[in-house]
Image 1 (tube, rainbow, N blue to C red):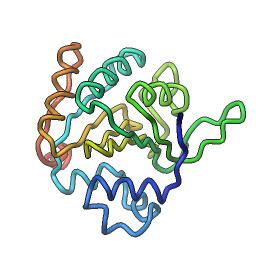
Image 2 (cartoon, helix red, strand yellow):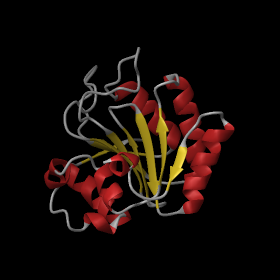
Image 3 (tube, rainbow, N blue to C red):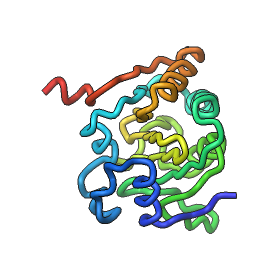
Image 4 (tube, rainbow, N blue to C red):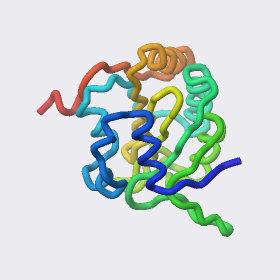
Length: 187
């Protein structure tokens, strides 16, 4: 069963997994500082990065579920959106921002049904609307950006290796990056 949670509960979940969010006083403050990913880039947290421009939606979610089942095992997932679009509202669906999901399959199914992605270009959301996933017990964070990127941040090399390995085994390229975001190196 999916449980809807408040923005305050989302911030508490981030604090539980990542001490760097202790200094953030409210969800609004966090969002006003830009992408949540920027907190991870600023602390040079290692991550897996994938460009989703050349993959079908169904294929991506199949690989994602396999990777997260393998890397995270049983976990509690908090899925939330940043800023504008939020979730589709259909058939009385009045979802607020955050939702707790039981497994990676539920995450993929919920995203596929409720995220603002066009079917023809499924990976592109509305500008400044990223969908984020907190893996509470494994202290990992994933992001599906409006620019068609997938990030998985973790201080656990074992988790990042498992995610990266599964993507590669499924013939889906990704990069394991230790340190700052590549765009910041180009400046």
